[in-house]
Length: 407
Image (cartoon, rainbow, N blue to C red; front, side, top):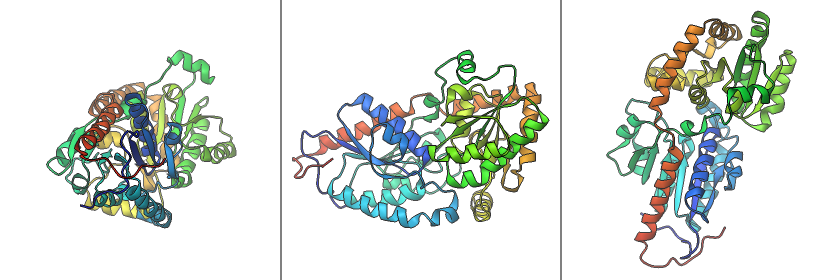
């Protein structure tokens, strides 16, 4: 194994480098960074992420806001830009190595990065490893490339154990994040909503292609609901400020009144009687809030074929909603691909509004899913693992490094 060059000078604060390749990783990375700073003041944190990590105080060397893609077809067009960033990152890490590197989710970017980092001899922790939701055996490459793995599910710990990496089940960060800070009564007043009228949340996702394919389905479904079930109030979380104008225009064109939220504002979303949610981490946030939901996903023809062949036929995983995957059964309805139509979505949401018993049954099932996510504190546990790696590294250093980390 090659030795890393350009070590930090003795006495300098340690530097941690965090890499998050898409919105959910940026969110989890921001929570982790705050937990790290609470435990150790003075550390320097640099990385690749987006606005949430930047707001948490990370010195970003690249913005990954538009790196997120579903499937090979959408990812291909991003390869040149990501490749150039990775080449620059290799030079940076080789000449100014951090005390530890944290990779978050995004296997398409972070697994190749892990191979590169392994050759540099740097200490690496993989947080939320890709595919950790699956109970089926899969590639164990990550267990051989990293020093520590912090996984959100107990079955993932069991599947990845036995390799080079120390594997710990830390739980899912959604358990600590998806909690309202005010009461429902205070939320009714703050957001100007009428408690006597139903509230539906429409959460179209965090990627550009989801704005293209999922948002129109939800907007049209909202128009149908307004016609068939009068008096419905709509909430719509905007995952990225760059999407705000697009979403606002889409609702305005259909004459739908909607309260746009700055991201997943849990104080407001706790008021929803039902939700349409794009497949992804947001489904777990709604589960933690106890909101009955319909999972929706639609994408390009190429991505659809890829999902059906690779994940469905070869992987034998036909579910897309995280609550259903985690429970290993159908807890919430899913409308995927050609079945994700405005009429079908409006019908499912209307059925939830009309059937209180069904909503209560779904909430009970979602509570079971929440228990499988572990106890709150994933960020804190992972922060302790990262700091433990730094301590082990410092203890193993037998002579002062020769060069400083510049920051």
